[in-house]
Length: 117
Image (cartoon, rainbow, N blue to C red):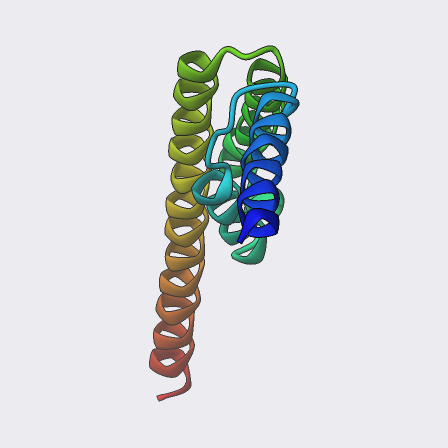
């Protein structure tokens, strides 16, 4: 029984040391990184208007990491929200560009069919 108490206190102290030695604020980067990944997957880097927002999102993510390391949790979270919003905008702009291209191709096919008939 005595051993369990000693090990229990040792575990609590160890957990406290780990939490205290984190070196910065803990923030959830997953939504931002997922949004950036989505923008990359839909080809945002190949769409001029979208690539700007994708680049901004990546830069904001890096800034957020630095802020979190410095213990600036609120500013890091705010920067992560901006990164996610910019990545989401990059996705929307990429899809809009793709839709425009598909519409233009469809119009061209219709014109070609009319000429052939």
